[in-house]
Every structure is written in C-alpha cells, then in structure tokens.
Length: 227
Ligand SMILES: Cc1cc2nc3c(=O)[nH]c(=O)nc-3n(C[C@H](O)[C@H](O)[C@H](O)COP(=O)(O)O)c2cc1C
Image (cartoon, rainbow, N blue to C red):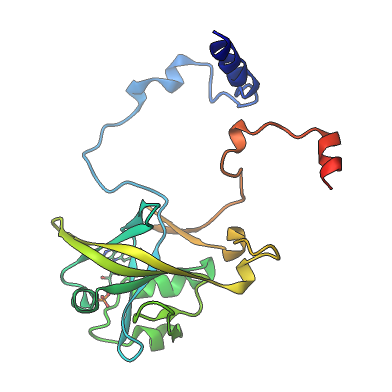
C-alpha cells in the first residue's frame, strides 16, 4: 500500500501541468484527422552519415541514411547498402567501415557523396574531405567530421533492396574540441547534421537531458552547498 501511494505522489510531483494543451477542442485531436498511408521509411530525423570504406590507399565514401544503434553491450550498429553501390563490394571484401558523423557545415559534401559514385570520381578530392588512418580498422576516417565509429562487420543480411551490414563498434574517435575539461563529450559542440524526409537540417537548441522529466529540482540551498 505504501508503495502505491508513494508512486502516486511521484507522478503528481512530475505532473505535466505546465505542458501547454494543443487544443481543448475534441475535434482537433480526433483520430479522424489523421491520414492513413501505406508502410514506408518515414522515420525522422536520422543522421546522414558519411561512411568510409576501403583502405587508406584505396578509400571511398558514401552517404548513408539507413544506420542506427542495435545494442549497447557490446555496442552494435548497422548500415544498409544497395548492391549496386561501388562501396558494396569494398564492404564485402574488407568487412570494415567507419561511420563519420558530419557537422552542419559539411552538408554540401554529404549530399555530393550521396549522389556521385566512387566508381567514376575520387569523392575525397572533389569535396576536399581528408581521409586519415584509424586506430582499429583499415578503413579511414574523415578528418573534417567530429565523431567517428570504427566498425567491424559480423554479419550481412540480404533484406531486399538493401543488404544490412551488422557490425561491432570497436572504437570511437572524438574531436578534441568537442570534449570538455572533465573529459566528457559535449555533443552540442559537434553541431551535427540531421536528415528528415529528404531534407537536411541543423539541430535546434537543447530542450532537456536524459531523465530530466523525472529529476527532482535541486533547492537553492543544496545548490550553494555543492559549490
Ligand atoms: C541523404 C542520403 C542518404 C543515403 N542513404 C543511403 C543508404 O542508406 N544506403 C544506400 O545504399 N545508399 C544511400 N544513399 C545513396 C548513396 O550514398 C549513393 O548512391 C552513392 O553515390 C553511392 O556511392 P558509391 O557508389 O561510391 O558507393 C543515400 C544518399 C543520400 C543523399
């Protein structure tokens, strides 16, 4: 009983009373006002990653939207790549790649690497992106990006239009300018690029941090004691 009542109290403390209601009118929030579309890839925003493949001697880069985190321990990711991409065979041969997360200022290069093939041109030269050696994989990283995930492929799954390259994230490389004095990553300094429904965006302002919705407010006194 005690648990139940304290649980209730908690919810009350963290109530959403300050949240503005969209509308009080039932008409506005009616399910009838939603359109039903057929299944599609409408997940947004996603990172438009610059994925590097090959080696320092023979590198290539392509833009990848179909990526994400699959597991925490061990850290696992994937990229889904069409067979007709020049990078596809390179991935099959080396079974390694790097996910480079681009800053908003790289948007033009990101788009270019997603519409031109390494079969025809050297995309590093064309975009002035610079490859550099990675600590754990033979694929290079892109110096101009602030964050890099070094990946080793563990499985490939033919899903239809794309083949999924499932991979262990064996190392991360982080630009010094995004790390604070306590050695922590300050992600807002990376100014990451986002992609949503065919368009590129920069991230907006930070609205909260993990768990903030249930965090108890520190009293002024406690705060001053901590300092
Ligand atoms: C924003 C964006 C996201 C893309 N995502 C993917 C993807 O997830 N998988 C894929 O196979 N191609 C994707 N592409 C297309 C490839 O990047 C493009 O075909 C590229 O030219 C392939 O390069 P390559 O032939 O040098 O390997 C994307 C393109 C853009 C612009």
